[in-house]
Image (tube, rainbow, N blue to C red):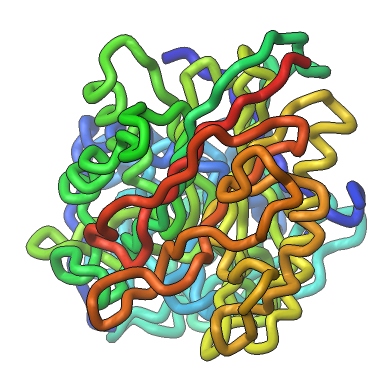
Length: 504
């Protein structure tokens, strides 16, 4: 499928911010498959510029894709411009205290060759298939040089691998990156520069379209490492995930397939596999599944949180952890947006994708968790709900799109019963209900703000709280709103809604 991609972070103030494991080298076919999987992501891309003196000062680090043998995919500071060979994403499985560099062109992590003989000793190659000690570095941040591009960070990378810890990555005399320096000598500092993807055919404003009906499904798939969800080894593999999604695609109230699906607690590398499953399940309907990571931050840039390895026996890297959206493959634009989130905790994300033929902007979100987790009092979720509300309103008032949005918002409805202890704060969604219609209200925006429970099973295995939502403009009306009979391998039930949208 042909794609035109444009990704950028919405700045809300502008619109209202181990154990050592060996890693084998993958083959060229593995590269193309893995690179295709991670290409579905709206995670921030970065370029890495050498601050070494002399020949390699100001040169961008490039993955040498066409090098051979043990030099294949080595990382070398020789480029004067940035393309896919020079772009990386940042990842962590230690809440931001470590950082790993994943190559856009190979889809794999920078890995020092600690055990190779000279001249390859410590050489970095973008070949790590999972996120183990060899692929993780302790970042040391400095103030960036004057005049650096906005959002840049000056950083040194120090190894943490057992038996090889404390070695700084440096630019050698030949420009190759090697983890060999025992102190932060000259050549160990780099400039991380934010890089977006080039090209988009996103057209403003939305086209005039007739009245249309849209079937929406939202499900928190609990795919990471929750021992209460029943996945193999407590985490979902793509085959098991696809079986679970396939089994609940049809709305039990109407028997219809969805036109758009919101996913939460989703692993990045499953996006392409889910897309292929949807196209197989619904022949003749092309799909586009996109992903946005949840991030962490410790004194530096936003770093993508990694899904836990697995499931066994392969212990495969499943990519970053976050949210995803499935829309018709006419989609030519998708956009990540970052909620203000508690410092030092998960930095929550959402994701929007355009459906031009219906003049719809579909958005999914996963707000901060409640008592005992990120947001004890609910103050952050209240702010995040306002930001989500403002984002939806922005697309409508500025560009004429009907915004349909939802997901796991981690709050119960504002009336009549909720408290913080019951999953609130109940007041967090007042701003959203004030402007939009929720699925359970059907055609009446003045009806009770409740709805069937969607999460948190009781002793009988029945859901006890509504924390999953689908919203649409008040000019629309929901003709169906239903909840799946079971949660499947998750701690959330699936919510379905059919919304009738008026002509634009």
